[in-house]
Amino acid sequence: MSKLLTALFALLLIVPAAYAAPTVGEAAPNFTGIDSNGVEHSLSDFKGKTVVLEWSNHECPFVVKHYKPGNMQKLQKQATDDGVIWLTVVSSAEGKQGHTTGDEANKVIEEVGAHSTARILDESGEIGKLYDAKTTPHMFVIDQEGILAYAGAIDSDSRFSSDSIAGATNYVTAALEDLAASREVQTPSTKPYGCSVKY
Figure 1 (cartoon, rainbow, N blue to C red):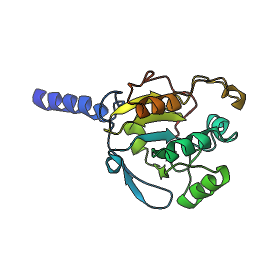
Figure 2: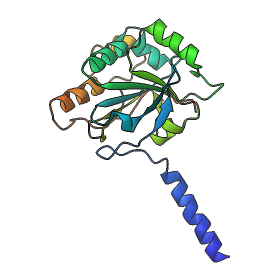
Figure 3: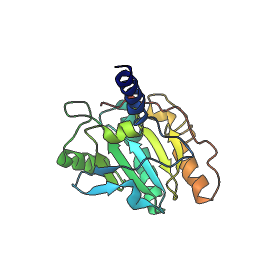
Figure 4: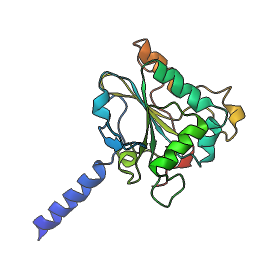
C-alpha cells in the first residue's frame, strides 16, 4: 500500500510541472494551435525566425488600451515587416469574456486593423497554461534559436488609460531591437499587467 501511495504522490508532483512557467533563457515550449482561418501553426515551424506571442482578449480594457489608439497594430506591423512572426493567442474559454469563433475573430481583426501573422484560438487553454499566461496582454518573445528571450508586460506603465503609452518603455520593442542587433535582451522579464486570462 505504501508503494502505491508513494507512486501517487510522485505523480501529483509530476503533473503540475507540466504547466510550470517557461524559463527565460531556455527553450520555449513547443505548441500547435489552430488559427481563426482553420490553419494549423506549430512554434517549431518558425525555427530560424523571431516569434512574438501576444495573449489577447478584445473585450479586456487593457487590450483596448493598446488597440484603440493603434499602438498594438503599429507594433505588429513594424515587427512583421521586419520578418518577425507575431501570433496573437486567445485563451478565453467558451462562454467566457473574449471567446470567439473563427468568423468572429476575423471580424475583430478587420475592425481593429490587426497586423499579426495569425490569431490562434486556444479555447481549451492548453497553450495559455503551457506558457503560464496570466494577463491580457501578456507578451513573450522567442529568438531565432527557439529560446525564450522575453516574458512579461508589453510596457512599463500599467495604468488603464491609453494616454500612458507615450511615456512608457515598450519592453517588446526593446527586446526585438536587442535581438535584431545580436545583443542580449537587456530586460528579459517583467511582471505582466492587464485582465486575467479567462480560462
